[in-house]
Length: 256
Length: 194
Image 1 (cartoon, rainbow over the protein chains, first blue to last red):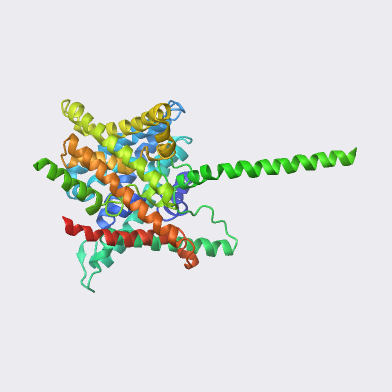
Image 2: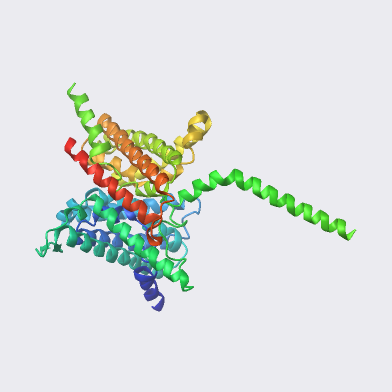
């Protein structure tokens, strides 16, 4: 039981997918125009994440290693289609306002990332709670961003007009999403810099996807830079090797 | 003649008015990740144009001739993502074998956009807006063109501002996001074209 609680805490606070790991930015920016939309998107993703984690963990000994990514995608896409049909039937308003971003949960890095990093290697119950924890972390962050954008952009709270000040409409539109995320990133950077000054371990906090996130391209910057560096790398390694050989020869010569 | 007009309208609307990154937030990962230099950004843009145009044509054909006759429209998400992933792999192999120059220019970027949300997003939008195969392909091309424009502009700005003296906490990703936000405001101006 303690392991399950630890998983929940991990997803909500320690490795919060949006605020700490900065994963799944497309839906985060697109649907947080209001708190209600953020909450709906978060809960839908949580349901998909929990169920797909559970099924993938059950099948982890059956799925061959080589075709695991396509298998994960099929499992995830199945649950996304299920959720899409359920929302269409029972919550048509939310379905309409989330629109194309519901089927796009399939390509959310958080889900594939958790399948690859946790569910494929761990037993069923912890995987289920890992999914729920990560999903709730995502939900809380989306709702918070939604509340901020709705409050500044429309001066309302969960759809209730407050009328305290003239709303700054741009925060509800596309540019506002970028500005709110920029602010979040800056706060994260600040915490990271302060933490590093005090000598705390801040390696967990990051901007962008880490290597276990299979379908997100942020780390491809690193990969493309790597490719460009290669030639220099080869040259410098050759130089170092040559120097080492020379030293060795000199040492041998000295011995003789 | 009317059709040409319609296609032109789609072209302008999808590339400028509702820009794929700046107003729909699709394909944000490569937009933020591969925009450090204009050269790599242009390569990424080229690969995206190539893949999205091709995949929206193929996905349109599959939807029209396979899913609709069989009454299986609800399978679109699963079918599209598998078809797109397989298609990109196939294109990569084909280019490697037969069109070496194109492979050298785009090859690095192809695997990175296999399951990019913009590719799937365009295929789904085409279905949602009930575009035919031709209109869908034009929409795909226009969307990708919009991505290309946005990423090259961002890369240009990033090259110019790389050594500017920002506060420590705003360096890196926050500054890129603020730049993207300002670009989004500029692109809001295109809404007049509608």
